[in-house]
Image 1 (cartoon, rainbow, N blue to C red):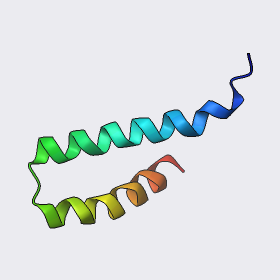
Image 2 (cartoon, one colour; image 1 turned 180 degrees about the horizontal axis):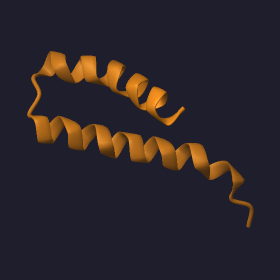
Image 3 (spheres, rainbow, N blue to C red; image 1 turned 180 degrees about the vertical axis):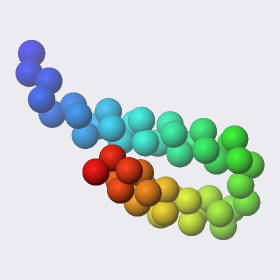
Image 4 (cartoon, rainbow, N blue to C red; image 1 turned 90 degrees about the horizontal axis):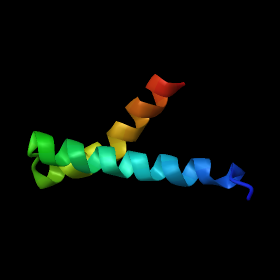
Length: 49
């Protein structure tokens, strides 16, 4: 079976799990959760580049 197309899907799942963990660990307020939803992937993308 060809598994070349699963990289993006598994990366998205890992991102979502990390985002949920960050929210629960930091006990963020609602507006900080929304800001984190936008800013956190940007920092992650720059770090992995």
